Length: 148
Image (tube, rainbow, N blue to C red):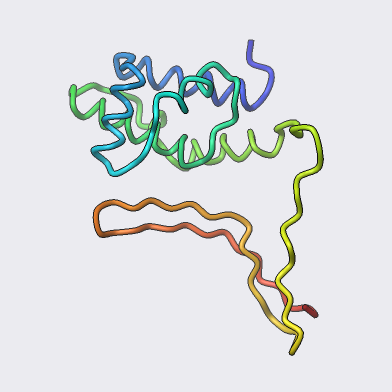
């Protein structure tokens, strides 16, 4: 029964895996390695059981590995099942509604500049992937104009 965004995320991950002939976790890991990504089977197993909320990089790697499986075996899979924007939105909903793990999350130390106040950038989230000699980094920022 799907009750939470995590339940939905896990159900969709299982659905995607089934749609590409249900490869073993080791097989998905090898597909990810060919793409320059790390996707250890021991990381995927608790995620696919719904025991752990994955990081965005893991979800992205899983989707890309499934896409590689689809291409390798010339399978016909719904485009929406491979849409990273849809996966990102579902992952973000999962993160927002996740129960706390016991205590409050540690607050990062604020960046302080004693010499002046003014515009500054606060990094909220970042993800990245290195493929060969290339690196792609996505950074979500807040731009603020206040005393530091």
